Amino acid sequence: MSRLVVERRPRPSRWLSWAAPPLALLATLLAGALLFGLSGHDPLAALRAWFVSPLASLYGLGELGVKATPLVLVGTGLALGFRAGVWNIGAEGQLTVGAIAAGLVALATWGTEGAWIFPAMLAAGVLGGMAWAAVPAELRVRLGVNEILVSLMLVYVADLLLKALVFGPLKDPEGYGFPQSRLFDTPALAPILVPGTRLHLGALLALAAVLLAWAFTARTLGGFAWRVQGLAPRAARYAGFAEGRIVRLSFAVSGGLAGLAGALEVAGPIGQLLPSVSPGYGFTAIIVAFLGRLHPAGVLVAALVVALAYIGGENAQIEAGLPEAVTGVFQGLLLFFLLAAEFLVHYRIRRRGPAAAPRTSASSAETAA
View 1 (cartoon, rainbow, N blue to C red):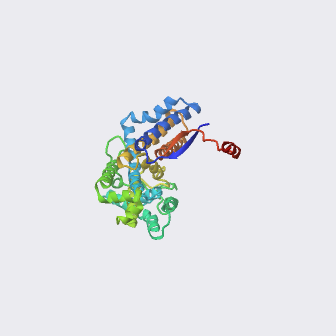
View 2 (tube, rainbow, N blue to C red):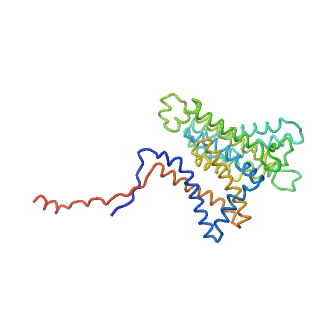
View 3 (cartoon, rainbow, N blue to C red):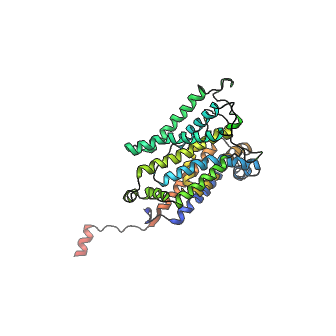
């Protein structure tokens, strides 16, 4: 009787490596439609409310850009690090610390006029994210500590730090006891790009980050060193590429971009410090990075798709009556199918015929006779 076996491919499938993200997205849509149908909702109406209606207006397109901006920034930084074999899983914490640093600048200059305030906030956000990312970087380089665990645990430290500040010294004295800071003044807010929307200057900064990341990876010796470090660490050491330097730079870039995303969140759509400044952009950006095949242009496209899932989920709650948790379910399905497709890049399933039955000692004796 034939059976199915899983065997490793001699080399990763080239066409599947690029087809995996679209296939994962298609499988997610089909699974989502099935889920909507089983829950008693019209699948077509739900998908229309999710993926079509949010793009039917200028304001909706602006919201898509607002949601995609932090995902592009964080996803680009993570993709660069992942390609170098540096696993920064704590971008959510670095985003939070960047938001705190930018918020401190905005509150320290409250009531002050000056075009320098917004750039100072962005610089503080970048430095805050880099400083938070330097902790797992140094622990890995100096002590060989696993950066995945350290960066992930620091997310909760950053979250508690933000809560301690907005519940304590940064609480708005005129906020009726609510845990929030003052509303930022106009000089501390991100300039709006399209009137009538919330699309702000951060969208252009995100595009600039994608272009710079592409130029670095494709046109510089440093980008080549990062790729070699991720693919073949022993070859990188033999070639003289300093692993510690690459690890530090990877964390600095990913942490700095995450901190910039946090600064733009509090200076843009939020406009103040709250107990939570992110719905999980730092973790979702991990999906974005892999959905984009760790390529800057792919990250941009993947960020737009995932951002559409964010705003589409909110719209589907209103138009189709879907529960709030369905957005998280959709992201989970996307991650599941993406991992399944990635598995098929390196492995294949083949049908193998029945194995020949072993010859018994009796039959052997008869044959000999």
